[in-house]
Structure formats: C-alpha cells, structure tokens
Amino acid sequence: MAVVESEGAEPGQNAAATPKLTKAAMVRWGTLTLLALAALIAFVDRINISSALAVEPFKQHFALSNLDRGWVNSAFFWSYALCQIPMGWIVDRYGVKRPYAICFTVWCVASAAIGLMQALWGLVAMRLIIGAAEAIVVPATYRWIRNNFHPNESGTAVGFYSLGSKFGPAIGAPLAAWLIDNSSWQWMFVITGVAGLTWLVPWLWLAKNDLPSSEELAAKKKSASVISFGSILASPLVWGTLVVNFCYNYFTFFCMTWMPSYLVEQRGLSLSQMGLYTFYSFTGIAIVALVAGWTADKLIKRGGDPIVVRKVFVVSGFAIACTVLLGARAETVETALFWNVVSLSGLGLTTANNLALCSLTLIPAPIVGQVKGFQNVATALAGIVAPLMTGWLLHASGSYVAPMTLIFGFLVLGAATVLLVLRPEWAPKIPQATPTSTPS
Image (cartoon, rainbow, N blue to C red; front, side):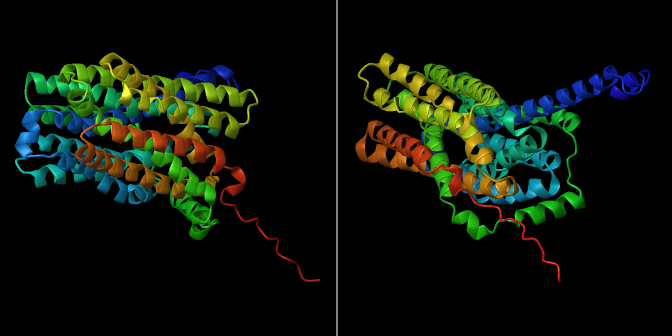
C-alpha cells in the first residue's frame, strides 16, 4: 500500500515518507498489541486453574488437600523456570514469529486438555506442558521491544505489554468463575483453551518474519562474549535485580494462584463475587502500570535521571503494596476487599518501571538477553515458592494471615534492595578495547 501511494510523489517530498512511517508505526504497535493479547491469553490459562481450585467439585475430583493445591499451582512454574534460558536462545536464533506461534498452539491445546483429565498425574502433566510452552512469552516480547522501540520509550512499551499480563488475571478469574457456574470446570478449561487459538490468525498475518541473518547471529555471538559469565555472576547489581524480581512476583503469583481461594474460603465470597473483586484488583494494577510507565518516560524525556525516576516509582509501588497486611488483618469483609484492591493496584507503580530499570536501564546492552534469562528464572522461582509456601502456611496455621505476612516481608525486602543494591557502579563492566601497539 505504501509503495502505491508514494509512486506519484516527487523525490524528497515529505508526504511520500509519511505513509511509510505511518504504516511502520501501525505495524509496530499492532504487533505489540498482539503480544499483549497473547500475554492476556497466557495469563487466562494460568489463572483458570486457581478458580477451579476454589470449587469443591474440582477438589473432590482430584482429592486435593491444601498441600496438594500448592503443588498443583506451582507445577506450571517448574517447567516455566527450566525453559526460560532455552526459550531465550530459541528466539535469538530463530526469531519471534514462528517459535511464538508453535508454543502458543501447544499451551492452548494443553490447557483445553485439562478438562479431559481423570487423574492427578494428568493434571500436573498438562500444567508442566503449559509452563514449558509459555516460557517463550517474556524473552520473545523483550527481544521484540528491544529491537523495535527506543530505550526512552521502553517504559511505555513495557507498560502497554503489561496490560495483557495484568488484564489476563483480571478477565480470566471472572470468566472461569462464570463458565464453571454455568457449565462445569471441565468445559471451562476446554472453552478457554480452544478459544485462545483464534489469536494465531492475526499473528501469522501481521507479525513480520524476524529470522536473524547469519551476520546478525555472528555479531550477537561476538557481543555476548564481551562480558564473561563469571563477571555477570560477580555483579552485586545483577543479584539485586534477581531479589527485586522475586519479591515483586511473589506477591503477584500469590494473587494469581491463591487469591480466588482466599476470597471464597476466608472472606466468604461466592464464586461470581470472587471473580468480580479479582477483576478489580488486576484491572487496577494494569491501568496503574501503564500510566506509571508512561509518566516515568515523560519525566525522563524532560531531563529526569532515568535511574532515579524509575527507582522512585518502584519503591513507591512496593510501599503501597505493603497495605496487603492491613487487608489480611481486617475484621470486616469490606475493609479486607478495599485493601486487597489497593495493595495490588499500587504495585502497578512498580511493574513497568521495575522491568525497564532492571532489564534495560541498568544492564549493558550486549548482555541484556543473558541477564534477562537469569531474571526470568528468579521470576519463575517466585511462582514455584509462592504457591507452595502459601499452601504450607495455610495448612500449618489454618489462616491466610501468615501467608500474607510473608508477602509483606518480601515487599519490604524488595524496596530495600532497590535503594541499597541497584547501583549503576555495581553493574557488569564492558572491557575497554586495548589499542594494539605498533612497532617502532
């Protein structure tokens, strides 16, 4: 279309370039929108198990105890963690378009197949498959954002993408609850899994084939060897980003895996009411994340120090999220629900700015992919630990106060780490090229 429109224009005419730029921008934002929608579908397929675990027919079908529910919730993250670094290598070697399409198909089919499982081992196997396939989401998305957006726009781009990862739980919980109420938990899995496959049509049509050339692969291999693996592991800043990512995601994964059961079992909500308040909480964090990322980008463009600006947002988000403890100890349902929404929504100040700070701003460009792989493992570790610790503490104490007090502790640790450890002078250093001496 752009070629046809520019044929009648004179050389050098600005109007001739405008359609091309407009089309490029549309494709860029259209592809980012599809990546956000894919994340939304992925998180729907993650959280629907949490809604099922809150209803008696599902628990009785698989004879699940509280400890069992913790293991089922964490199964996804075992394979998710193991496949993070391999998936990062795959998208660097084969691009984003085709690997993403294959993995997307696998996780949708596996999610639908949960509705057909009769034994606990089958349920766990499907969750492991979903985790392995969804491991492509983050490395693929960050590779695409890094290649298509200026670093000063990273907060907005990541915030926009984060809409999908936050609206997924917001939509997934009430949708799963409605489907269970109006059909069964079996049909809920089948419908949500199969419906997601429709995303493949616009993805295969719009996303460009970004298979890297042999020259690009050689350049990447050369740049990746600039900093040794040992230098990365020796950096206090890198370890600090792992702690921050773990602390942030511990809270979000608690909300994704145990919030439905908490609202039904401890606060006495019906399944439909649970879905509604889960929607409010995750919608809050999605909107705040986008606005906070955009605002930080604007402040940076006006001369603000990128590290200082993003740190202020990240620490503020952790501080507001600490109100989760007020919700845990609230005596009335209304007060508990209020702080439930406020704490998770407030964490949205951290979301996009933490990702931009820890994965782009503070990390040297040649090793962003390697460090992001480590960070993704820390994120997945939070997904493993949060469901298991919650199940164990619930089993031991009989109340959700203990699990939510632990969340408070991790939020404080995350804020302290941002302030004390995320210092640019502690980042891995790129060795300076040594000039070769010429003989006299």
